[in-house]
Length: 278
Image (cartoon, rainbow, N blue to C red):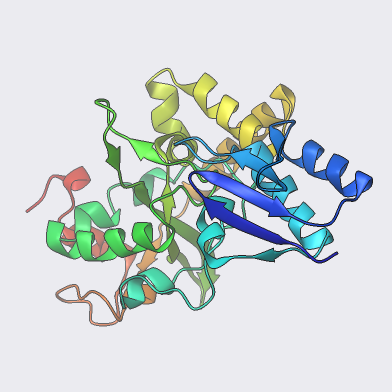
């Protein structure tokens, strides 16, 4: 089917030849929020300031692929996509980290032996800003998981949180916590990546609600995911973890660790706030 998807005035405009089956498929994908514009001779989905919901993004993108619609460049971001060839103002930091597939949110709980080694504690504010700002800008300052925009309490827009995604692996007989990539997350998705803190703050219900929203899970499935994360945590906390930040070798340096590999015995030298050292 020949057709296009355009973006104008906070609206996604779907133009394609009349097809009753396609019309119904788009209505289902949009959750009933699509309307026909006689003036535009097109189907219109109005998009609020928070963007499309997580429940809409996947089905709408699948509809576009299934029916072979061409997407204008301006429509990529509201659809949760990255325009081809996009980099963030020429910065490699944004383009180094591929997007996380929408609808794949997992709970996480880092082992206690690794606490305090987040980049915000290890790096200077200026160095951290040089990493996080391009990562967020590269995805249009939207959450990479649910595509939400972020706002301060007074309603002003702000950047998403920048979160580290870690891989825990064994290498030459050692246990290694390796930084895989950085990701832009809204506060709700970020909370799911720190379920221990959420539980202490009495926010477990909010974690479960976000897992259900993004993944389309039942209450039981979301609770099972929290149980899984705790089982993994119980295993990982039993061993010491070296720290591998080599994915950032083009962007940062850390005194004493030219290859950005920090043995477990040296992690306290990073001087992060958790260990309360200078």
